[in-house]
Length: 471
Image (tube, rainbow, N blue to C red; front, side, top):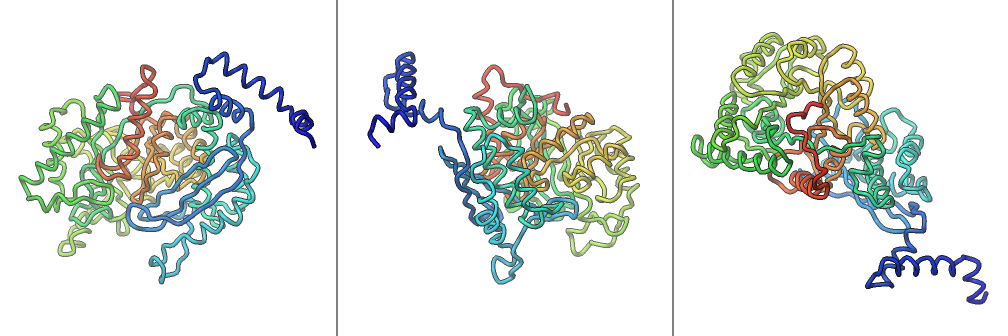
């Protein structure tokens, strides 16, 4: 075949002429680079390969990382993991070989991606998120993604979402907003973990997290500064009262002093020292299922010498929450009761003393969410993407919650990676709230720093949830 025949066969002469004309109109100073990029845009992106590997999360436990290749670029994602998994959430596939990573390896999930998912997705358009996700769901054929593993499917789903955004030449949050039908992205109010307890720390505090919410900030940048300053004031308060050895941190970066109820006094004092009494509120993640025995609650379960000696009834816990919401600026309580105690969830929600967040109660499960909506068991969804398994299904459960006029908290997990996907997700879905740990530790800050970048990119169009954090 001659050169002219080759040019004619692929209509290259016309395409090259169009590219040159575009370069002239743009008055580019680098015509070769411009023409190269112009030609590249004219080619439809398709998935060419998906490669997975086993990496370690922030706790040193294996998780899945994926490199998704198109004919234009490579896109990487990695998935988080929690301390515990529930029976209603998507299945995280682990190897179970106690001789390797104590049974926590993810070689099976990695193999499923490299051998099965990759082959199924080759040639697909990365902008068609729903088609990609449903192709994997159909390949798995189980209700909770137990065959391929939700950790395998989600890693690919997120990577495909990034590839789709790149193909459309829009930011990731904008692509997510388009997928969900949201017209107005919004920067969320961060819920910074400042004190850790429960299963996230080795202290005597029963509840899992005490968080601060800078709802009085005008921009996310200001909210991050307020959170950081208060965090450092809290370190000083703890050091003064209990010594520097009580400033060790839990898995998500919160301080872990060996205290109980006085932890709230420490946080309140730190907020005051920072000068943000009117701008910062407090949130609790009680994670009550962890210390519920039968129908009673052991607030001393972290203290071996006291555990089992002073149980509280659900009614006692209800009264405790009433008191705390009067004494402290608490605006949100997550999992105040056991995950199957629907009645007391309904009771506390009916009091309207604060936002009631369902985490263990809901497990980001559409059926559990529907029941909670019907029974008015809570009014806010804690969204954990790895409990769902695909970007498409995440968008669906957020729509479900929003249609019920619920709040939505986009959440990290205790075992995190440096992937900042949930930052873009929270903006694109206009969730209003994000829970990504303390304003320290790299894997937590990656999410907050990405939100800074998004706000900067949006410029005058940036909207911070602020006082509208519940919408």
